[in-house]
Length: 367
Ligand SMILES: Cc1ncc(COP(=O)(O)O)c(C=O)c1O
Image (cartoon, rainbow, N blue to C red; front, side, top):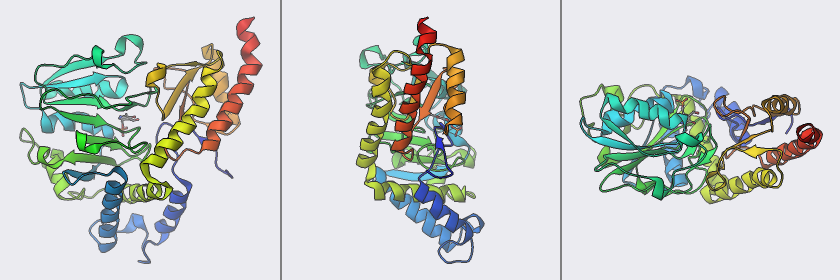
């Protein structure tokens, strides 16, 4: 690391350095066209190349089957909270939702505009610090789909397995904060969406992976911009797409392939998280927020013995180049977001700082 710091931001988050360097060049002149990527028409040959390569690399990384379309949209992951029920949930039918934190709640809040919402599992009563297990889950009679947030960015909890889907319901996942952090069987999903700004690229573009048969027609008349099928049919170019975001996602996918694909990502992410979790488990100054078996490999949440010490920790960490580590206001404490592109050395630097901090302040808490 030179003039850059360790950026623990939950998103927009740090990107692979090689991707940023390539982007610097392509901003000025991409493919020897004499035009930078930001200046190219989304209908020209250069952007055709970008679109094709981004889709191809996305398919290769995730082993996405031909049964599924890949496309992108704007409006953030938040727009998908209403897009999903608008496209899939007929009036009078029910969709099952896992209530595991703020982002899940944002989705749940939009469902009644279109149909009925059944909470099939919830960790609300314990501050969303765990993932409901099979015996804690109760599905509605005949849900159209089951939706879950695969990684709870704010709480630091993660589904390590996909939930079950009763009957002929299909699975919908908000994978904004752990997509492509490990291999997953995407053939199991009806729809996956992910805001790019954590593991895939910049903010402003949302990746969608959708089963083709499900998105042919929405279940009700909808404005064109709200129809998944139209966006998919036009390869994410129904209207002007966020061209830079699409380009950068493609570069991130190519980086993942060069690093060894999702097996390599998974191994690296496990190793990075273990550096921090092993330390947290070895002492009792810092307390984790999430239940051990449901801890996230992407967002690691923990607290000092008091809010005053949390504040001091954040200030002193910042001064040492360990930035943006303050926890979300609803949880407090700290959150270390260590997505695919976050370097291993940042995890060891954080643990070294945590050790020093605990050593300096342990007496204050035991006195
Ligand atoms: C899991 C999850 N879902 C949804 C969102 C909302 O994304 P956006 O701000 O792109 O709408 C976030 C943002 O951090 C998130 O972490």
